[in-house]
Length: 194
Image (cartoon, rainbow, N blue to C red):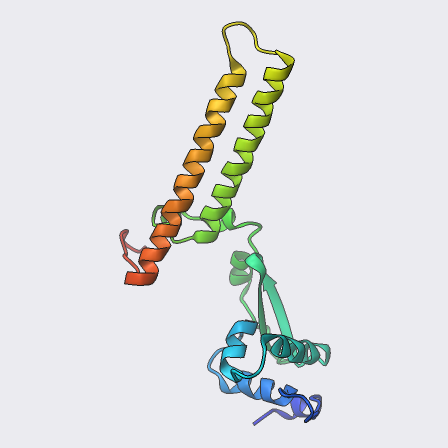
């Protein structure tokens, strides 16, 4: 049953293939307090597109029935905007989810077990970018002939850049292989949990 504060606000347009009321009922009937568009789409109907679900959620947001929180990695969570609730997360949870980058959340355990894919991909991207900087700097030193005799700094920068590209590619391939193994065989639990 829809609470009266929601029932008074929703539009009863029966011309839509998906009504605002049906979206709210689906959210209220679930054990989950929040949904991504994909999760809500899976619960509604297969013959309704994700765009339709997104449109209904935007309409419900405009009438202040549904609220949203957007987190890193482009994750948006929708929830019923109960007036008496401070949901969606506690201050500790908000700090954890609002970390500036995936590297802020990357732990030693997450790195060693290759389970924090966002953090590892950020490391790989940083490695690729740093290698480009080293290649460019080595190229500039070569073109202007700025090497002091005997140092060969441009060659050292190029060697380091190629080594960094190789390590970044190796880390990316290892992470994807570990993810494939986890998807196929389940978590391996190589390190004890804390």
